[in-house]
Image 1 (cartoon, rainbow, N blue to C red):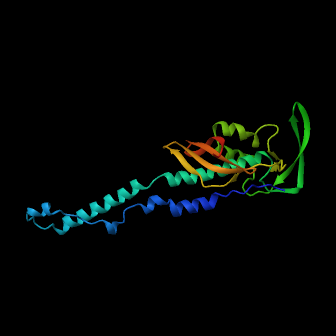
Image 2: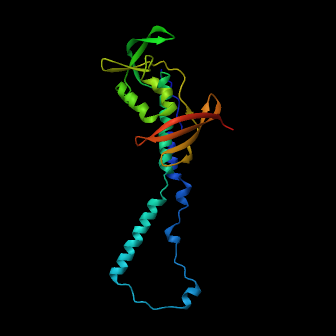
Length: 240
């Protein structure tokens, strides 16, 4: 019964960017192409200097190696890491959207329980099903997933997944239950995310989405909190 929208960008995106991150790595200068060039003017006056001792040569080689290693570390761009973080956050938002709509979670439909909910000042009964999804075994794990992935306005939008009288998840006698309504939800990503802005504690990423046959662009803003990247906002624009 779960209606899980396909997510086109996850593993393929990471493979693409690890293989192609593509142009930047290809643009690095091949050490075999680097030669020491001395002009004729430089060679006109030659001063004979004593040959370096074995100890000096060894020290010089170690210094050169250290410099090369340092350069390699400095030139390693963080954009690959930000891309992986963006992929994870777009996936988390997708999961949260499905969970809020009662979809995307495996349940045992033979094990049901009724819970009382308040809707428009009225109390109604709603059937929840026992969760068999191995990702979540308790309400605290659901809460942790949402709070580790989202903050700001997105957390406010989706915290009713685990919080409140009408929460999508409920816990009873040590078992986790899910509303499992299966309403249309989730996003069909149709491109690899693009990092448009990045700093030490924030980044912005865009991705194309198919929304009922219409191409849209999602712009996700992320911030670092408690040493974790979290999606703070998501805006939607028609793809021009």
